[in-house]
Length: 125
Image 1 (cartoon, rainbow, N blue to C red):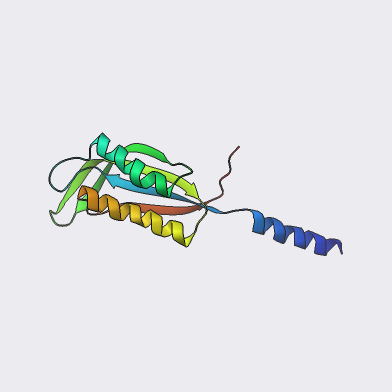
Image 2 (cartoon, one colour):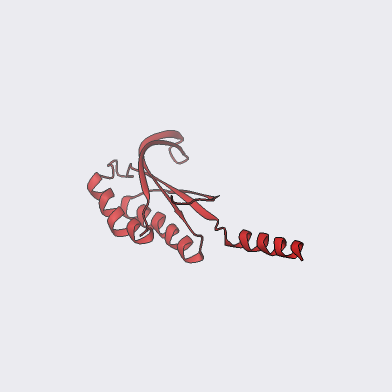
C-alpha cells in the first residue's frame, strides 16, 4: 500500500510541475533601404505588438549581431534587440510569437527574425 501511495505522489508531482518555454527573439535594426529602426519605431513596435503577445512581460536587451547575407555574399554586423520571455507553451502563443517576426519583417524591411525556444523550469520567488 505504501508503494502505491509513493507512486501516486510521484505521478501527481511530476504532472503538476510545469515546464515552461523560454523564447528569445533576435531583431536586427538595419533596414534594406540603408536606414535603421529608430528608438521611437522600436518602442511603438513593443507597445503595439510585443506587449499584446506577452502581457505578462518580457525583457529587451541591446545587442550586436552578425549574419551572412547570401545575396551580397558578405558578413553583416548590425545593432540588434533581443526579447526574452518565459511562458507556458501553447499552439496559440506559438502562432502569436511567429506573428511578431512577420510584422517586424513587414514593418521594417527585414529579411528575417531569429527565434530560439528552450524548455526551462522557471519559478518566481
